[in-house]
Amino acid sequence: MAARSAARKERLGPQVVLERFLPYRLNVLASLTSNALAQIYAERFGLSIPAWRVVATLGQYEDRTARDIAAHGVMHKSTVSRAVSALEQRGLIVRRANQDDRREELLALTPEGRDIYEALAPQALAFEERFVSVLTAEEQELLVSLIDRLSGHARSMAPEGEGEGEG
Image 1 (cartoon, helix red, strand yellow):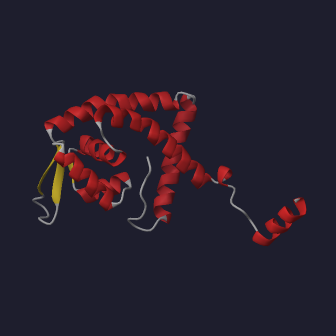
Image 2 (cartoon, helix red, strand yellow):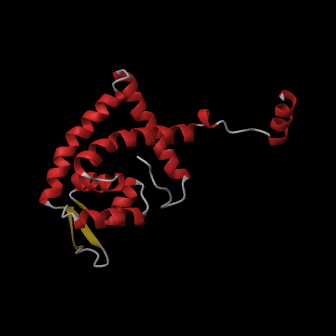
Image 3 (cartoon, rainbow, N blue to C red):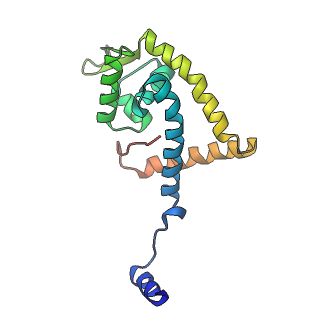
């Protein structure tokens, strides 16, 4: 058995061990974190992950185009489109003409959507605080710095407009 394993390893060359492969580990961490956070906005507010990202983006920036939201949340345009439609049907967002570009519509939270954002934001921040509480303050600062650096590098390596985030 060991001889066969060694021969296979030699034939295949370097192997990816997923449990030690950083892109895989980051994806697992993002999925676990996103799923844990989703309990707050899914159970309490009936929002999907993409819908939460749309609400959070509009809560942060007031109004944006669907294209802006997709880029900000690293989501595919069709995912944003479905989330926007669902949120619009629930009366949580509205569309209005973009005076600067008539081909686009600006999206904004309705008062009910704003209420959800304002109720959700403190809960999301409390979740974040609990999540990073296993790290010291210095480790938290370092983690933020490393994520920023890796994110910038990953964006420079990725084809323009590709990718859909999980978290």
